[in-house]
Image 1 (cartoon, rainbow, N blue to C red):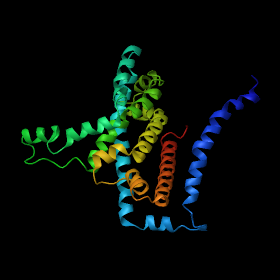
Image 2 (cartoon, one colour):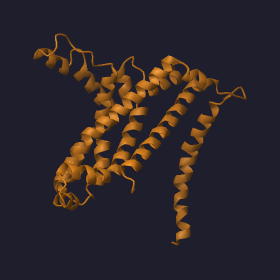
Image 3 (cartoon, rainbow, N blue to C red):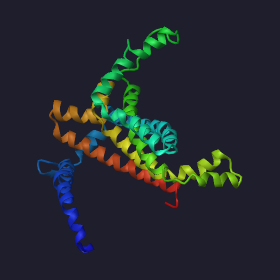
Length: 273
């Protein structure tokens, strides 16, 4: 097939995405600027001027950013360890890393409810060894949501990093040591910058997943609201589809802003691309 006809292979996918994703998104965003045929931004003014909604937005950002940061801290050394193993061992370790994804998010959330509850495993252990006098309130807090989301999205971070790290030549680190650099300095100066693409991809997957997650925050957060649960409440309980569309638009804008900031950070960490 000639190259000028290869683009035709993209048409089915582009058509599907246009009809079922791009057009609905633009219609949803466009509907937030019109009320009874009149252009207005009153919905956004109401949204951003409400302290309760701003608190929900800040809680969502806090949960998403902390979840992403912890996934990086845990996933980076784990991925590096896996990437340095032989192919057979690497396959087993990757399977173990991905194994939690084979379980439903609902099942995992209920499991964490049993672990983090007032009479759960964690509190029974802490009171049993005398570290606390009374059970800690962990369940139905932002901390519980973060724990559940980390468990949910950590495999995505590990997979993203392993894919990059396994292509890094180990001789680079040994060469830096032969030139007088310490192992830590060589690692930070060579390995980390080369891992930036994997870090960015993994961070975006974890952040966007945490920002839009519904099941885990709903079950582990209780009355703690995040943007996704607040959107569901407006759409399905209050039947306020206009406000739900505005919230969805804000989620889209916040997502693109964070992705842009991450790309800027990537350029600073790895100026040569």
